Length: 179
Image 1 (cartoon, helix red, strand yellow):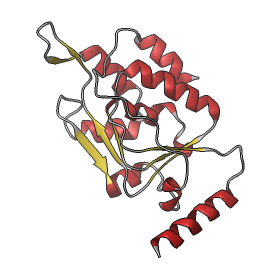
Image 2: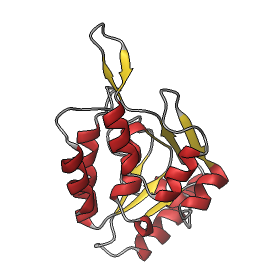
Image 3: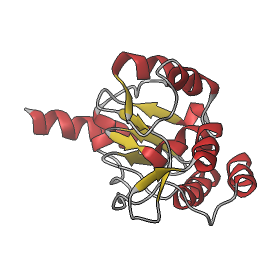
């Protein structure tokens, strides 16, 4: 029964999609370096592809919220966004918060996400999660949850690495997002 329902959803999705309306599915993406995600999402923004968030999108992955127009993002009931302060490795090898990179990351978010983050104490080393009805109040729900599993495979999830990078300046990231 589940297989039949899944196949039906896939067929309906494919019939309703023109070739120019490609979809990228994000799931199980724990983030990585800010610069890597700015570059990735700049290309995605230019492509015109829609984004389905259908699982975990945490850390630098959440840059997608500011890089892709809101009308091209939808969230499934499985979507979870995870936010925290950007960090680097300190001299002793421990993770230390990078205030400049944290501010850069925060500045990329839409105002509704900033308000949600602020209401929970801001970006700190502790991960905070946005999901469920709260998330669907900020971003449109995908009209058919099954469409996410019938489309492109998720972007590869890089191994956890520091979210901050010195290779991307605030102006470069802002320029990349504003295109």
